Amino acid sequence: MAAKKKKKTAKRKPNAAFMKPVKPDATLAAIVGDKPLPRTELTKKLWAYIKKNGLQDKKNRRMINADANLKPIFKTAQVSMFKMTALVNKHVK
Image (cartoon, rainbow, N blue to C red; front, side, top):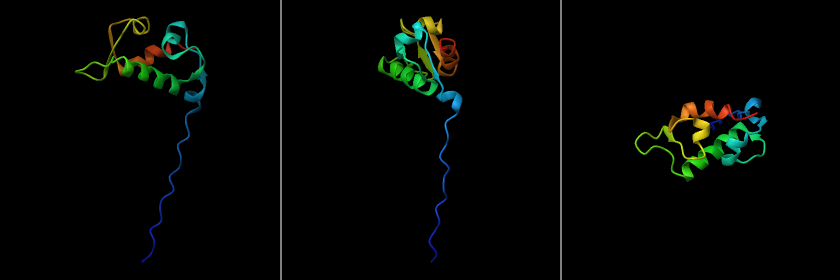
């Protein structure tokens, strides 16, 4: 019997635009810190904050409930996780 060859899987290269460090403004810095960081890390820290504080809606997990720190960013009491990234992008340089 011939040995089966394994396919070589190409390792995904991260998009350079996502890896470029961005600087959060003062409002967003209250949540993720004030040091420049890539968008991917910024999103991870934001989700860590949301999960730590239990801000995901209990019935519809795609919705994020704003607390005192997130309200200035979202400008509303609740926002979908898809719209969240667009709103956060307005607070980075």
